[in-house]
Image 1 (cartoon, rainbow, N blue to C red):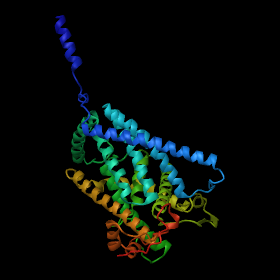
Image 2: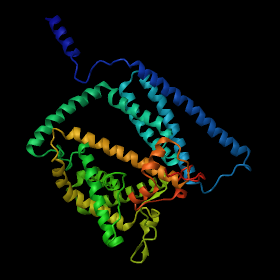
Image 3: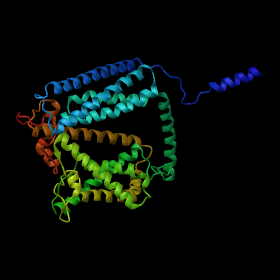
Image 4: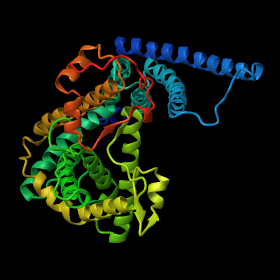
Length: 427
């Protein structure tokens, strides 16, 4: 009897849950990648320390020969930030590589997410410093590798996601039959914050925002005059409104029953900060200026918000963002959900994936076209095949006609290639 009890207890203790699968060995390819990460980080850290040390030594020993400006250029500031990010990234690479070699899957997955964020920041900073070119290939490859590792390396997370997908499929079928597909199943917010919903919020609001801006320009800014206010190379899209709507949906989703004043103020803050950030990035990376509220007044008094943000946003437009956010959360979101649910649930994910890929290609080509436009205005030779492609099919006249509200001012950017002297190539 005792033996039977012991055996039963042993069997019970050996029973495994769905998430307790045996730990597999790290594949050889990932071990090699882990070694490369350690070598990369280990080589970067001493180089950074040596650079800082040499700089400090030069300042201390040759103070007369070294001049430190009290007003550093934007390019210098971004370069310093980039240097700091590179050092932090190097340390994380070493820790991540060790976790891969020791087969600490959950730990490696967490560090992969950290490195994804750092890699994304590095890509953005590199675009602001050097534009779009071959220097982005390695960071993009690293980003893809890290994304694959983050989503597949931890087997417990992989099995958990598989079960969640099956459960979501059953819930979608039941919700589609009940007419509640897309609603937050827990009731904490109005809409379920998944990729499908947020992507179509972006698409629809990019189109609605463009329509609103065109009408505003024709009725208020320049009555009777049509101006194409599109923000992407193809299609009737203004991505700043799409991104703004996504941010407001994520931030205000839980507060759709809250006081309208709170919704207005939060939406105004989010919209104003986002508008200012986009303006700064576009001008820094591509010398592109699409709006400028410098000199705006309120009842004859200079607008303090326009002064504070150097004309990148203003009080009236922050109030407009607040009003749009309030209308969006209180009135448009429920109807938007009904519009999204027109897409049959059986094909929604495949259809959304195709549309997302097309939108991503559109965004990449838009950034490349802006980058080549910047280089042509800066008299940088168009020698690469991709540059010649954009020079031929999306030349300066095309870009000026497509982005009618935008101007390129290379002197306002942080790019190192903003002062070339080579002749402009348009064919």
